[in-house]
Length: 205
Image 1 (spheres, helix red, strand yellow):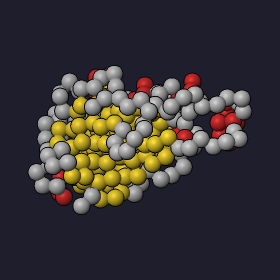
Image 2 (cartoon, rainbow, N blue to C red):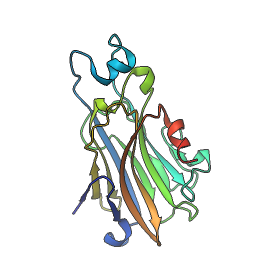
Image 3 (cartoon, one colour):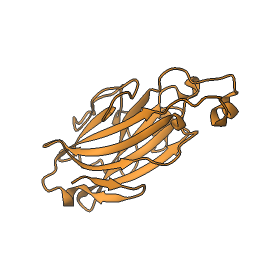
Image 4 (spheres, rainbow, N blue to C red):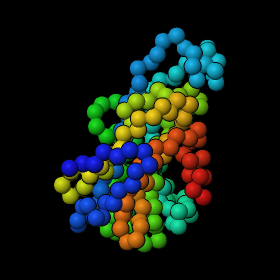
């Protein structure tokens, strides 16, 4: 049975899922209905004459960390680098709108084969050209991250992000990490004002 997590909660993947080798990390979100009349955060930041520009394009990425740090540019797996050099982390492709049910983007992780040098994988989502398009996470609803056992497609856990993230342009959803020889997951749910993936990655350098 899938576990529903709260912000800050940690759970062991290895203990409760014997033989777990490969997981699918699914990330999803929906565009919130557009409010009428302007005002609020966007008006104060951009001026009331500015408005949202088109669909919101959220991009999911995975950072592979060594000793908690991002050492190589190639350790960022995203729409511009879909496959990690080790072959153990693969991004399944970019979704430009977030429309439809279920996962919007998926990243597969071969836990059994990840090189020992990597101790943590952080999953983040940023809004593409958020500043230029005058978009932020207050325009997003139903955001979640979930982990699925790739061997049987059974959901292991899910974390629904329920806080108000108005004004945030990026999000640290969660992380998978090694601890005492086992893999664990932490539900992070931290919003940031980073304008792009580069600035997000700089947090871990």
